Length: 322
Image 1 (cartoon, rainbow, N blue to C red):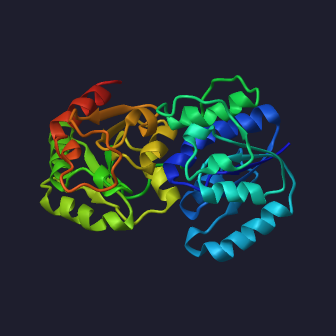
Image 2: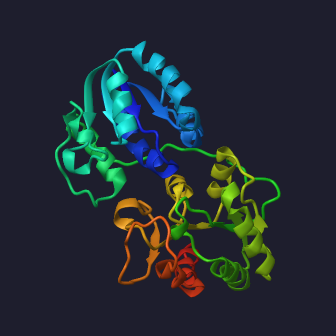
């Protein structure tokens, strides 16, 4: 069986799709083809359950759509799965040479993609965790196994020049409203060093370098600052060997979960029931406007009210374990 997975999206969405792909590979003995955007390409292209990765370049989509169309028209598929549920992904599904096209039910579709002539999985709770929503496609196809694995691996050795042990502070977030404060991370760095005797390693994208520098400057216990300096493989290795990961709502949070790490997730505008860590600890303050799902906010009190003491309580529980 040949299956085309259309999931272009963000790193977290792609990671939450992996358990479905693993089940499709295992139970349907399928050849898995996956269309994905550049950020998540390293995760998908190296995965043991994915046989062929088709890169979709959003930044040059006109030329990319031509190349992707050639790739998906030249190969027949038994199943084409639209897991993105937006106009772009649904159009790619229609362009593919597929016998069956399957998508989400009408209520969970975006951009009026319910109008495309696809089979639709049964309606379900749109507020349930996205990983579980993707697994509904397996259930629709008759796969009843409930086991959840990601099958991601990293280097067995700790990266050179990193302290031992260390805690990762992943400071970035695609949506600015999801970010915690500079002072919060700086104070947490100090508290972790003084209470546990453990150093902190800052991770984030290039857009987080200025914030990381500010944290580094005002922290008396200097963290190792790797913001903007890591590849995806580097990030996997750094997360894999961390004692714990403190993170905002962003893709590396899901990557840390998939690698089996202890995760403390700081949530504000988003609903952690739907997009939070599938396994881990969530800190979310009760404020009248949260969750609001806003990308930006002039006064993000839902995040600023989280204190280093809140995080230290979670870390105490984690680090007290053998």
